[in-house]
Image (cartoon, rainbow, N blue to C red; front, side):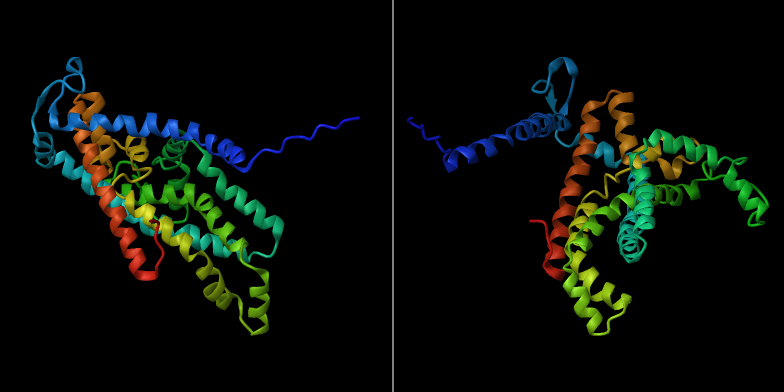
Length: 308
């Protein structure tokens, strides 16, 4: 009986299949990220919906001049930068510290439960978080009840209507929601450390603190720098700033809760000033790019870790 030899696929055939698998991702990126960039031109035009992208009169930098002369823009810019810097310092370092502590817990079951419980808030909708915040921080809510019961304060604290509390409240919510989720990537990096290094350190008499300082921290230094660069690049967008401003902001705390995301929404969708809103967004994108490049350059100069 004649046996037919099965034809073996050539190397480039396998490679072609693998390369084609990335095609849907490239098309998605092209359609939703690159094609909309042509809309940037309306930031320099007296845009009218009926005229389309290529119609309308060119007005140069008029929208940008109006933006920088608007008092609301300065308020929104100050609040965005203030909230972002506080979050960068607090919510960026917290996952690193939490991952190092979690890695030192010897009880595997307790460690697993702690990691699960601290990760869950990341998956909650911000609408739910805002609702819970309003319930708990109400003047008659449980937090004020506890504070008054312990004698820490004699009067209810107006957490949501006092402007001076909003930035710390926003940072606290981010800390609660993102610390567990952010620690996952650092824990993964620590888990990848060769156990023989720990054993060698123990033989040399290294305690836990020395092990963390000389083994764990150097192992995750590259990850820390990459995430720090990305966080610095997004300072002017502020991550969750818009959600917090939109859902927890009110007329009483507007001086500190009004951010650039809300300012763009106000002008773009509520007042239908699409060209002006595009100019604001273009300003944010340019500043983000400059911050990202500067952070990348600084990281490369400091310790050789950079993204590109």
